Image (cartoon, rainbow, N blue to C red; front, side, top):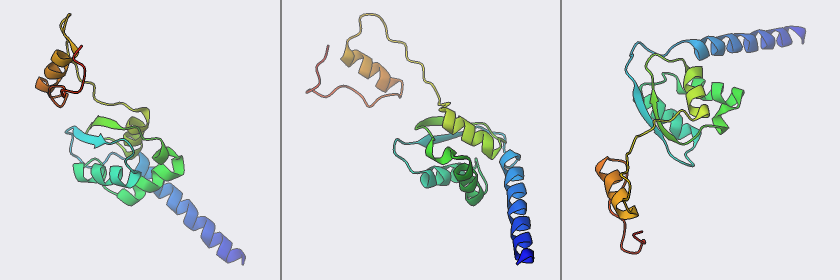
Length: 138
């Protein structure tokens, strides 16, 4: 019985060490920034798949395990992220949990009404275009 407990403890210790090394080791050699979108209500599994597809992470199982153990999987904020290349998995989680989203600048000239602002946002690529006729244009 003592031997089984010893083997279990050693196994858990090995997993913990491996996960700790994974958490702090930068992923890959690609130094380009990656754009990743996290939609409101999106599950963590979908977020993980998107990060893998973008080349931000290399091991989705370990990434999800790390997030789950640290409790960060439930605190990811929605938004558009620009993830630096060569960042560690714990660094990726920090960005997603802190909500360090991409900010877009839009200058609105004084006196613009809501319709003109919506058009300016659409031209800048930040909106969906002119307001619908049912929306007041004030």
